[in-house]
Length: 428
Image (tube, rainbow, N blue to C red):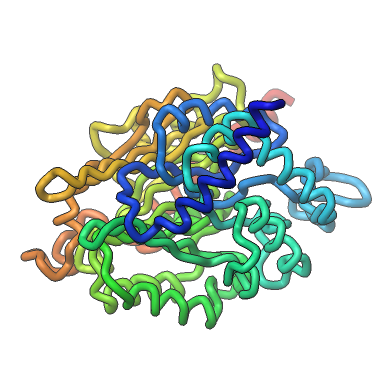
């Protein structure tokens, strides 16, 4: 207990020191992650601490604050299926949210991290308070305060006075600055089927000022949901996932804002989907825009099946079309996705010429499962000889694929079900 108390006190002092030193603190190691169930074991903090990041970024679902009801197909209240008439998730009380945050904040491995690294973050739906919720959620202002308390946000912080948790940080001396922009994809988001706004007017205005402001060598934009990948375009109608791709007008606006700002060195980090991958889009900003997805610290898609059957998840991940996924020799599996617990790791070699970025998704033991090495000169649109749109490797959006390719996962699943039904009829 004494060690825990000492760690908490050290963490508080460190946050104050780092907050005051942001403008000259040379940043070379950053870790990030998402989707951490406070009730589940969290051994991955050992690997994160071994990586020894100077900054750790929460990308949402930092706790699971809502209540998940069981699958009920039949009965008075049905939570799933074509006859669903009751929600699968319901919000919990603010006192229960606080209790879950306290549990998460006192995980021993996380306490050790807080004692030596600056921790920043945003939220996603489950720590916002309700699965897939947006601006309509009534408890958002109360839950904003709880998140900011969890992140040890100063009481006089502008984040405590604004509508939403978006913010930015700048680290490093002139010429070696790293800007971290954290978006809020919940507080102002319109309904999923609306193709409305993700950020809302006030946040869009703020983001424009951030991107058009003083330059930085590197700009990391943290979004709780994926920016580049739109797997819903290829997994539907079986199931859909949240992403910027489900708001195509907003995503185009984001790409245009980055392009018009003439800002170099921009890439995204994201969470939410319970697997890790790296995607890129070559036709937006005059240089490739990368999105490194790390999800989750405890929640992972392969956990839905026992170990001997997890090859099925890996096969389906490989079989599902993805036009934006980076596939290279650094991938552990053929799909270049990773469906077990993971975290993101960014290493910046400021001494290299040009500056080099090593960005990886790492497993519970700290070993890379996918990654990219990027020269900072590759992320400079206005010094390139290749103009926007000429590099076509990752320019075809998922929704533009031929239908036989785009829907091949659904065709496979429905074919298997039809064959099963036919065999059952033959047997009977």
